[in-house]
Each structure stands twice: as C-alpha cells, then as structure tokens.
Length: 166
Image (cartoon, rainbow, N blue to C red):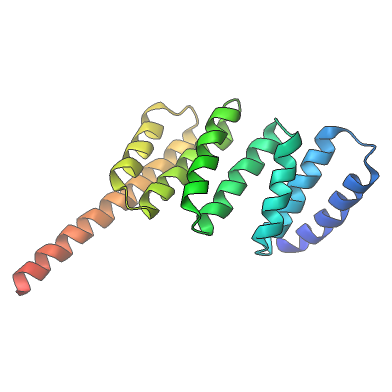
C-alpha cells in the first residue's frame, strides 16, 4: 500500500475495531493494517503496539505477518537480540505459513550479517536454496548469497591491494 492509501486504511481499520461486532479475522486484519500504516510513517512504537495487538488474538496469516513485521522493526531499530527471538518464534508458531517463514529466514540472514556472523548468514541462505519449497524465496536467497560472496571477494582484493602497497 502506498502512504496515501494507509491514511484511508487507518480510518477504516479504526472503524472496524471501534464497532467490535465484526468477526475476529476482520479485527485482526484491521489491527495489522494499523500497524502497517504506523510503520510506513516511521512510528515504530505505535506499529509494534498494533502488531502485538494482532499477535495477542491472531494465530492466522495476519499473526504471521504481524510477527514478521515486528521482527523487521526490531532489525531496523538494531534490536538484534529481540529480532532474532521474534523470527525464531515465528518459524515455530507460524510454520503453516511458508511465505512468512521464508521471509523470516531471509531476514535472519540479514540479522546474521549485521552481527558479523557471515558463516551463519551463508548457511541460512544455502539452506533456503536447497530446501525451501517456494521459488521466490530461493531467488532472493540466491541474490543475497551472491552479494555476500561478492563482498567477500572485494574485501579479499582490497586486502591484497593494501598488502602490495606496503
């Protein structure tokens, strides 16, 4: 959704939650969209609150997406320990939703790179490439792995060039 649409989504989501006489799925979706709207505006605290609201009642795809987005906010905020825990629990709690499991493993590879564990990042991506059922996740994993490998080659070349200069 583009930012302008989030403003409309926010109004409708608030109405759905306010009325309360709708089904739980609609309320979960509304809460998720309130979080997505807040996230798109950079209000990570409000977004976290809405994603947690969604998670408190949604054990469906909305809950899986909310948990992933919570992990993404934690990653972007450099709350790496919480990010790791959130993504690992997503893979356990929402294993039935492969789209979000795949995205969480891709984000886990970013987490491993951010904390300096290139080996684990590469292992995570290789595991996705070899074992994950969704091709779109495999394509992204291959691209990320290629970028990591290229960065390693560039680093080695820079070290060699530096040693030749000395």
